[in-house]
Amino acid sequence: GTTWTQEIVDMIQNDGDVEKCQRANTFDRQPFIEWALPPPFNSGLDHAQKMPSPRTMKTHLPVQLLPPSFWKENSKIIYVARNAKDTVVSYYHFSRMAQIIPNPGTREEFVEAFKAGKVLWGSWYDHVKGWWDAKDQHRILYVFYEDMKEDPKREIQKILKFLEKEIPEEILNKIIYHTSFSVMKHNPMANYTTFPSNLVDHSISPFMRKGMPGDWKSYFTVAQNEEFDKDYQKKMAGSTLTFRTEI
Image (cartoon, rainbow, N blue to C red; front, side, top):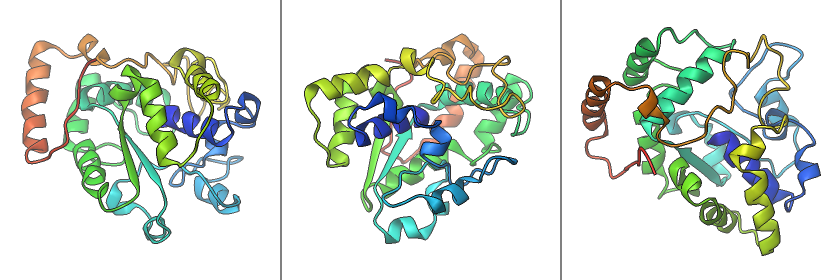
């Protein structure tokens, strides 16, 4: 969902100019501020610091770890949330193909680690709730992956309004088309195929796999689903945040 939103924002900022959006891969267009890859790649922070203002950046940081300068500068933040079940499945496959993060182990082991918050960037439950609670105090647009899949036009219009940008209908339709999963899956500037296989190994799993809500049903047994739901209810108790696990 993050890469998808990055592409949408970049296309909005470039008025739907596909060629401009092909100028570099996602990592270079919108630096991933907490990410540091081995040479010859620059760290996301180094790259961000060299960019002229206004800058568009990416982070997966939980709200409490975001650098204070973002709040001080009153930065606009788009937060993309996806339901926990599809997130854990997607995260598992990403962890298998990304050679620079710890091996996820078996699918069952990874689900347990996910529930315990023992994965990169910590607890999904705390992450989504933390940003949800912050959205009314700061300039945060909180969007849901499932809503984006259900009606991309409606959600892109929300992003346009948030960015205070107006574009003609034909440009909007162009953005919808070029940021669709089927097109982005074959876009080397967005699908991570420009990275060497010692960083991301697409022979294990493609970065863009299915892109559909409800894929978790192909992986969870009835017992696993019931156990996951029980744990989920405990961790999300008291929050007004709700997710759809299918559309």
